[in-house]
Length: 71
Image 1 (cartoon, rainbow, N blue to C red):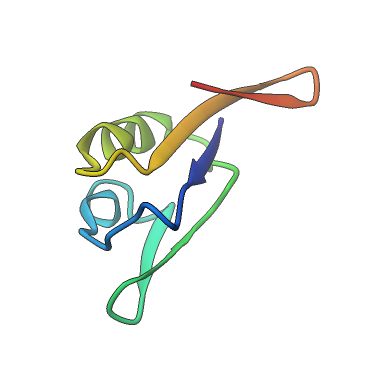
Image 2: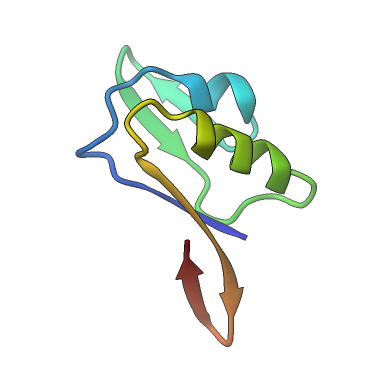
């Protein structure tokens, strides 16, 4: 699974950090860092984080044939 965050849309609410701390991390007060390739066993945490984002800045997708299909 892959994750993509629209950093222009992200407002730093950090709901994703609380729900998937192995994938998302706040850098400073509002800068978000994240791991584009979701570590094994973290898929459900990332899906919940994406659903909880107040501004819907997180997209998740499965890799298929070398291209990520973002949903």
